[in-house]
Amino acid sequence: MRRLLTRPLRRSSAPADAPRAAGWSSAPSSTIRARRGLRRHLPIFLLLVPLVLGLLGAPATTSVVRGDELADAKAKQTELKEQIAKQKAEVAKLDDLQDGLAAEIRDTKRQLNKINADLTAVRRKIDSMASRIAEVQAVYDDLVLQLKGMDVQLARVTAQEVVKRTQLTERRALLADRVRSAYDSERTSPLEAFLSGATFTDVLTEMSYYIDVGEQDEALAREIRDDQESLAVLHQTVADTRTRTNELRQQTAVQKRELDRQLEELKDAKRDLKKLERQTARALRQQQNTYTALARNKKAAARIIAAAAAKQKALAKKIDSMIAKQVARGNIPSRFNGTMDWPMSGTVSGEYGCSSFEWYAPGNGCEHFHNGIDIVAPYGTKVRAAAKGTVVYIGWNWADGADPAWIVVIAHSSSLKTWYAHMQPKRPVEVGEVVSKGEVIGYEGNTGNSTGAHLHWMVERNGDFVNPRAFL
Image 1 (cartoon, one colour):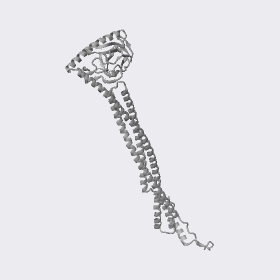
Image 2 (cartoon, helix red, strand yellow; image 1 turned 90 degrees about the vertical axis):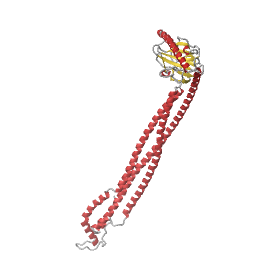
Image 3 (cartoon, one colour; image 1 turned 135 degrees about the vertical axis):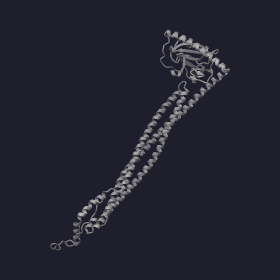
Image 4 (cartoon, helix red, strand yellow; image 1 turned 135 degrees about the horizontal axis):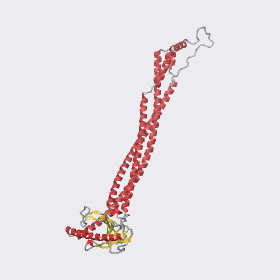
C-alpha cells in the first residue's frame, strides 16, 4: 500500500531569543491558524483514514481479468494431464495389440513351417493377422496425429509464456516508476492541505486523487502477483508438454519399427502361402487331369465308385475281424491314449472333407467326399507309423478294382486304426507286428488309381473315417 508523505511543519522564523509576551505565541499567525484548523478538523480526518484504507484495499476490476487468465492457465494444465493419461492408455493398448499380433505371427509361421500345413487354417490366420495389423496401424496413426497436435500445443503455450513474461516485466517496471514518482512528488499532501486551513471540500478533492492513485497501484500489484502465478503455471505446462512430446515421439518411433517389421512378416507369410497354394494347385491339376482321362463319362465313374465302395466295406470287415482276434489275444488295447504324428512330410494336396473330384464317393452330406489327407513328396519317401500299434493288414487294396493300391493298416485300439495307401509294394514290417510311433512301415509310391507319387492317409474310428488332423 502506498504511504502518504507529508512535509514537516514550518518552524517559526522569529529568533530564538525574541521576547515572549505573556499569553502570546512566538509562532507565526499562519502556523497558529493551521494548528487551530487541525484541532477543529482532526475528528473528521480520523474518520477519513479508514475510508482511505478501505478504498485502497478494495479489489480492482482488472483482478477479475487476471483471475480469468490464471484459471485459463490452470485449465490448460488440467487438460494436458488428462491428455497425457489418455495417450498413455492408448500406448498401453497399442502395446497389447502388438503383443497379440506378435503371438499370432509366431503361430502363423509355425503353421507355415509345420509339416503338411493346413492351407485353409493358415489362410484364416493370415487374414486375422492382416486385420490385427490394420487395427494397430489405426491406433498408431492416431498417436502420430496427437504428436503433431502436441507440437502445435507446445508452440502455442511457449508463445503464451513469452507474452506473459513480457507483461510481467512491463508491469513491474511500471509499478517501480509509480513508487518512485510517489516519493519524489512535490505536490502538497492531503494532510498538508488540511493543516494549511483548506476547506473540507478541498481536502476531499485532494484525498480522492491520492485514493485513485492508491487503487491503481494496488491493482497493478495484484496484476503482477497474478501474472507471476499464471507464468508459473504456464511454465510448468510448457515443461510438461515438452517432456510428454518427447516421450510420445520416442514411443511412436518404437511402435513404427515394430509395425514395419510386422508388415514385412505379413508380406512374407502371404508369399509363403501363395507358394504352397501354387504347389497344391499343381498337384490337384495333375490329379484332375488323370481322373478326367480315366473317366469315360459320369455314369461309368458312378459305377466304379459304387463298386469300390462295396469292396472297401468288404475289406473293412475283413480287417475288423483280424483286429478282433488280436484284441482277444491282448495284442491291441481297447482304448487309444495319445496323439499321432504325420506319417510323412510334404505338401498337402488334398484335405479331408468335401471335394469337387467326381471320383470320390458321396459321404458326410457331400456329393464327393475325400475320406483322408493326400500328402505329396518325392517318390520313395519313407512312410512312418503315426502312432504305436499293431499291423493288421499289408497288401493290395482290391477295392480299387483291377489297378489296386498297396496299403498298410495299423490298429491302435479296438476302435481306432490308420490306413496308408498308394505305397510301393514293399514289406519293411509284417502283419501282427507291433510298431512304434515313427517306425518305417513303407515307402511312398504311385500304386492304384493315383495321379502321381503321394500318400493317402486315413484315420478310421468306430467304422467311420474321420479327419486325421484331429489326432495330431
